[in-house]
Image (tube, rainbow, N blue to C red; front, side, top):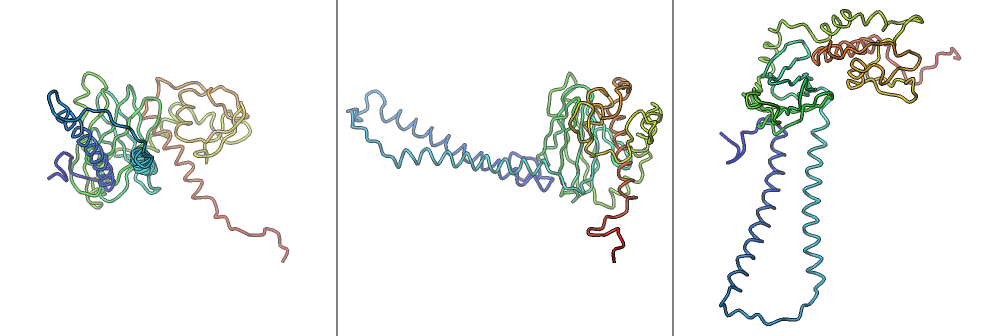
Length: 327
């Protein structure tokens, strides 16, 4: 059963707000469309050829109140649309801190998804009801677009750049998943579904997966490509240590700083000479064509895990503690 005549059943907490804005835009558009059409038809009939309507010229008076009114009202309506839409857009760009993060790789012509515990899916996404889900997405080839009509969310999936999308499903069931960007001859077949389950049922489904966690797979790739021979600690290291690196503000050899986030790590793997860390030489080879997007996401997960381990092992800081024994 649909929530409206023309819209699919709502499946997320965000969908109702999008529908409300959409209804407002449609109502304003219809009001002015029918209003303008009415007056066009009215004057066409009144002043048609042969009608007895007076066509004598009349003196034109400028009434400021009317001129101000027909200028201010459209301005206010436009600002309401802009403010309402901007508020929804900004909210959609700020996922909750505790959101379940799933990585998505789009390719001709399928969706490849992986959960934090390692469980992989193709053209299906299992999520728990009532919990925010954040997707970190990238394309291996052309532009795709991750679109779930029931959630009222859509985000382009781009080659060479990470994009994010989040939603919070509030209804158990299955929802259509489409690619909303023409991506080649089999674009129409790039479809799937989002399956929303109760938290307990989702946990049991997740536990049945046999895929290794992305940070473990990332560590294996890290060792397979001999990255650990340079990225070590100590004075003899030929590359910066990765322990605690993620999200750290890092100085560059060319001057300035860069935050070691997902985009920077990906760029460093594919184009290591673009931003060289201060104190090191640009000796790292490129791994473009050797490691796919899924592998890069796994290496990023491994580097993240190194920072998480450091933060768990670090002793808590105590404000105002004096290390000197001054009594």
